Length: 639
Image 1 (tube, rainbow, N blue to C red):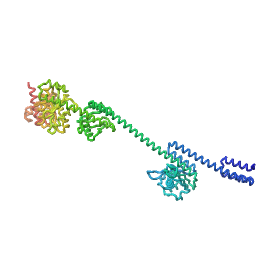
Image 2 (image 1 turned 90 degrees about the vertical axis):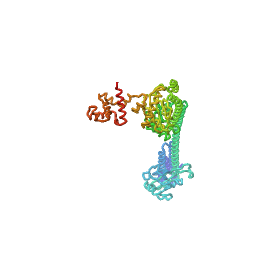
Image 3 (image 1 turned 60 degrees about the vertical axis):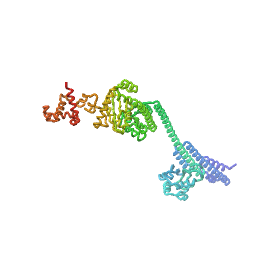
């Protein structure tokens, strides 16, 4: 049986171990027994038991530390599994490294491939802004040695360690932080060995006093570094995956958009092709394209005048449409026209007209191609219509030649033939005769057909001129002639003189109107008015002589109308004053004696006459017209 003293000492040692006593407390057990008077053999047993208790104490402490390390590694692994925030994971690893190794600071550096250096990514326990903002050249300092060799390195005293390159920047930062002992381990990817792994950073633990790091501490910090490397690599992989997914999403969106555009283009192509195959009209093209693009469409001819349009859209000036069509023709594609778009309708190099898309400021590539394809379809339809019109006009031209040359041979037969061809000769028509120089005469016939394009009427070459019959729509003959002269000049590129007569109906009436138009055309050329458009009524007294109707009253009214109206309203006799003035040879003295008026009164009346009929009335040509009108007016008042 052990002695009572030994038993008491052993019990005390067990209690100390159970209560987590320090090594000093355990070491004092033998001294305490000696003070109580233990025998030598009892002291030997107590000292051996104390030594065993110290071994148990060290083992328990190692187990606790290992348990804490494993718990930290387990928690780190859990953080990696979640990995919602890379910065938070790295901060947690650095903080645990500092706590487990019991150092003053811990920090993590990563390379910056673009800048060609390394930077401080995470710190824990640091108090120096200079240290926290360090950027170190690759290969420099303790971190550079660790990165180059892919091995852990510990320095008990950094300031005196000559195994690595010291730099002014690093030493200044370390001194400002007050660090002395530093342990650095690599963050390795691809292999846990020193060969084949890629170093992506360095994890450090450091004290502000000299210290040696044990192999267990190096291993622990290396384990944490491995977790940090996995976290960084996983974050990069996730970032790459997200970027790839974003690119795939963008590509998928582009593919869907492209597929939608192709489907839209296919539908548009089928619809426009169907229009061509069934011989649709330009108004059908306008309606179809307007529905496809969601905005009103108008089809204009080469002169800028509208041929067809869908519902809506403003009226544009013809000059603006012509300019936009020319711009589109030069660019080879649709061009913007303010808030609208315009596209030339071409047959080879010939400009047939323009398409205008209204109120559509933005036009993407797919819709732009659709709009341009619509112009091609419009060109096909216009060419078909022109071919049909040319054929019909050729037949109508033969009829028109017979009407102008032999109107009395078979009037009823001519009228019947005209109706079968879609022209009612018994309806009132204006007769236009167009003439140009020899160099453009060949173009004039085609231009006459284009002038009628989209409208009723007949155009045919007759003699050295082109004759056009236009159904009477209330337009004055002179105005119709001026419009035709402008458009024919534009189409031929040279001046064209146009004379008009009518309206007239029936073969005989149309032939007579043609003769009047020819006389008017000859008079215009003699008067130097080539390249203009006019009717006999526009030529003054010559029109009275040249016109078949001899509209004397109309001539008098056109020449003296303002004076006649003034005299009727005021009870004056300006017409008589003017007649007396001319009868006296335009001599004021003789005129005032003849009128029994003061000369100033005569001058005042002549000034009033000028304000009513305009300046230049006393010139030779105008004076001749006025005197003729006065004579005709006087004759008309005779019983």
